Each structure stands twice: as C-alpha cells, then as structure tokens.
Image (cartoon, rainbow, N blue to C red):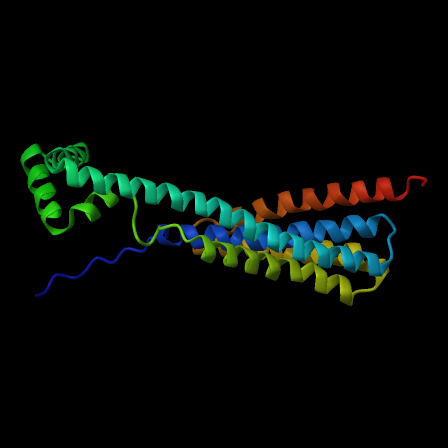
Amino acid sequence: MPRAIHAELHFTHRIGWLRAAVLGANDGIVSTASLIVGVAAAQSSRHATLLAGLAGLVAGAMSMAAGEYVSVSSQSDTEKADMARERRELAASPDAELAELTGIYEKRGLDPALARQVAEQLTARDAFAAHSRDELGFTEEQAARPIQAALASALTFSVGAALPLVLSALVASNRLIMIVSLGSLLCLALLGAVAARAGGASLWRGAVRVTFWSALALAITAGVGHLFGTMPG
C-alpha cells in the first residue's frame, strides 16, 4: 500500500503580506478615527471634522506609500548589492565558495562528507541559487518589491481610513464621537482577530491587543482635542 502523505499546515508564508495588510488597515482606522474624534472633541463644525478626516485619509495613504517604498527600496538595494558581490565571489573563488557552502550544511547538522556531497550537487545545479538561499537567506517569495509594497500599503490604509470617515458622515453630530469610536474599535477588534486567525495565533489575544492600544489612542486624542478646543482664543 502506498504510504499516506503527512500534510502539515504552516503560516510563515503569510507573514509578509499579512503584516503589511494589517499594519496599513490598522493605521488607517486608528489615525483617521483619532483625528476625527479629536477635531470633533474640540467643538469643531461637522464640515471641519469631515474635512480633517478626508485630509487624514489622503495624507496618511501617501505617507504610508512613500514610507513603504523608501524602506523596501533600501532593502532591495541591499539585496542586489549582496547578490552582485556573491556572483563576483563565485566567479573569482569557486573552491572557497564551495567550502563555505559545505560549512553551512555542517553547521546545520550534516556530517562533513554528506555536507560536501550536498554542496557539490547544489553547486552543480545552480551555485548562485544555493548561495543566495542558504548563505544570504534570499528567496524569490521574500524578494523586496517596492512598488507593490507601496501600493498595498496605500490601499489598505485607505480602506481602513474610509470606515471612520463614512461613519462620521452618516451619524448625527451629537453622537459622532461615540459612534466613530465604538465602530472603529469594533472593526479593529475584528481585524486583530482575523489577522491572528490567518497567522495561526489566538483570536482573543489578537483582538484584545489591537483594541486596547487603539482605545488608548482615541482617548488621548479626544482629550487633547477637548483641552485645546475649550481654551480661550
């Protein structure tokens, strides 16, 4: 009888996109909701509150895109420089690079003879790929993509920021702070739970963690808006 295949479910392949998506949406909700609540707490007009929220959405999305692009571009530059150096070393000193690869496999638990055999076979197949993966830690799936990262961050931030903005446009002015705060915290809790679920972690821990810090941000911003909004001009 054929041996049954042991299937395992892992979540590490989701870390990159999950982190970017959660960070963008979370920032969009928290920063825009806090801005709206802070401006509303300062006894500002409905028009001023909505305008502040819209400006926060646009500015935040552009800031996230620019920051992510610069950050990931720096990572990409480093990766390209390391790979170019590795190509030169492979061309100039193939024997030394083979010995280096052998040493890597020995440190991972292979005996010297087997480590040498594995290094020779992988070098014969694709020396650069073997060194990129096992010496530098680079893989195609984890390669830096600045434009993709920038667009994803801007999009997820905008989606998150749209929630408190839409709520503030729909509810009555005297209930704006309460509805925007509660609605945003509810969505943040759901976002934390979904992110935890996708990453294989505890739903409650993910939800409570993001809700606590977001509630703190909303409370502090509302306090600042109320304090300075009631000060004499």
